[in-house]
Structures are given as structure tokens and as C-alpha cells.
Length: 166
Image (cartoon, rainbow, N blue to C red; front, top):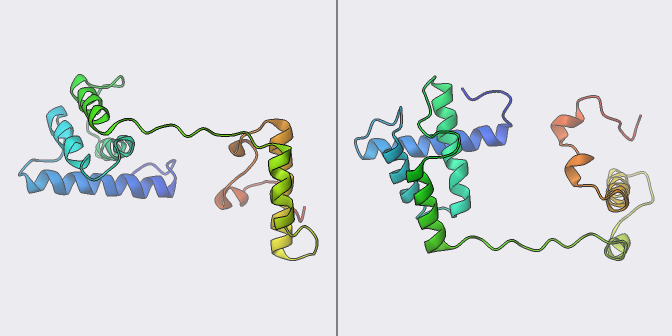
């Protein structure tokens, strides 16, 4: 069982990756656990046919998580292994690294284009959400904040956070 400290979505992704690895290994008459470096490198080359190179690290993390859950030693050292690293170098050479999209800052001018689209008056749930969005956007813009510094998920909302009704 994957640690409860891991988010449910991440846990599901890790489980899916581990099952895929297991099916792949068993289809080739390979005992999946404990995994060898050579086996993991072959699996990385296989899944690269279906996934973006950047996504493969998440799948490796899923197999690592399964190793930890089974009490097995993970064969890849913290700094990485040369064989796995060479797989990634080759995959980036063939597929290329994804271009980083330029992230433009949110300016007051850009925010002002949102304003006509929002319903800020009234007592409806939608109006309250729009007011919260507008307030958070202004705070973030003027405070140079990232969303994670002041927003929270629905699960986190159940904890002691300040709410509109408070």
C-alpha cells in the first residue's frame, strides 16, 4: 500500500504505472520485483513509444513506490543510474525536449479584461465564487504570489481555514 501521505490522484497514477510495469515484465517472462536496472531501462524504452518523455519519470516513480511498499530495495541510486540516464538522453535526442511555454505575468490590464465576465453582485454561490476569484487574483497580482501560496483544494478546505461564512 502506498503511503497515505501521497495524494489520492498520485496514488492512483503510481498504482497504474506499477501494474503496467508488472504486465510488461510478465509478458516477457521477467519476474517484476525486485526490478533490475536493465529491466527498468528496457521498460522505459518500451513505454516511450506511448508516452511523452517527460511523463516517464512519473511512471518510474510509480514502480519505485511499489518497491518501497513491498519493502524492496530500489535499484536506482538517488543521483540516477548511468543506464537509465542514457535512455533519457537518447529519448530526448530522438523526441526532443518540450519547449517551455513563456508564462506572461498577470497584469492589471489583463485582469481588467476578466472583470466584465464576472458576476460580483448578488448572494448566489456563483457570485460568491466570482468574488473570491477576483479577490484572489488581485491579491496574487499585487502581492506577486503563486496560486499555491494562497489557494487550497476542497480536501484542504475541511481543515481550519478561513471561509466566507466565518
